[in-house]
Image (cartoon, rainbow, N blue to C red):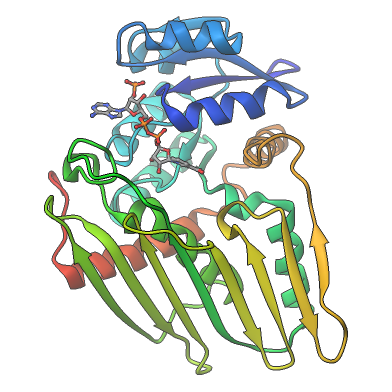
Length: 328
Ligand SMILES: NC(=O)c1ccc[n+]([C@@H]2O[C@H](COP(=O)([O-])OP(=O)(O)OC[C@H]3O[C@@H](n4cnc5c(N)ncnc54)[C@H](OP(=O)(O)O)[C@@H]3O)[C@@H](O)[C@H]2O)c1
């Protein structure tokens, strides 16, 4: 590997732009190539972000010998094929969330990566954020006592458009895979990967058949509960509240947290702040680069087990609603 880690960006849409912005400011990173299946898009992207090479297809990017790791930023439905393509061309991969549409696909990709000795990580940025890592440590240190309840809701108003990736079943649309993955991930973090003992759920399926709003109630063996939801139909403060036996935590914008408040016992509320260096996507990129340099095949922050646990939970929720995507 050269001194700088050379990134390929596969899919040049909205989130790829945010990631490229973070990469440009990250020491040791170089945006080496961009690939888009939309003619002309990779070239415009490359010019804007100072990327050396561009391709009007995904395979040429995956085959570029001057790329060390590919960031996959297509819509959910394409992740499985795009990650597979990159692994088959011998590339390490950081792939946007959800890594795949279901757990079985993710297991296949982790098995392929392991067989080829290649790094694979889901770009679940929340798990790499300094504020979340600090909070995780404080919870482990029992700062608020045993956690009894987590409330986390990710709502945003998305104007209805059946072709938009949020509404389009062919693009694996719906609130769960796009937004619900964040409160479920936070529950996985707060309850340290323990599986819930019982799950109740409800989904409001819209005209295109995907969940426009969905609710997930998880009950843990200790009796603790997580009350979670996601929606493209309304607006909410996007806060998470963690209630412990002797204190509480409030996390602002929990999916992309840069601060949180903590109240322990009779102490005054304390604010912990972790301003981003760029826009928050630099931490997942830095973690992937740290792992590559250390020769790891998986990140301890976003492990294959963690990715598969949350995907397995999402499979079960969709099974309850009878929601399957084309080709599943
Ligand atoms: N971590 C985060 O905060 C965050 C935020 C937003 C999204 N995401 C994730 O990032 C992924 C992409 O989201 P996005 O908002 O960036 O999506 P987007 O801009 O709508 O599309 C991204 C790329 O996917 C391909 N694509 C989109 N619609 C397509 C269609 N109808 N047919 C064929 N290809 C299509 C295109 O790839 P080409 O350029 O190759 O044509 C497009 O450039 C999703 O999996 C999402 O979950 C993560």
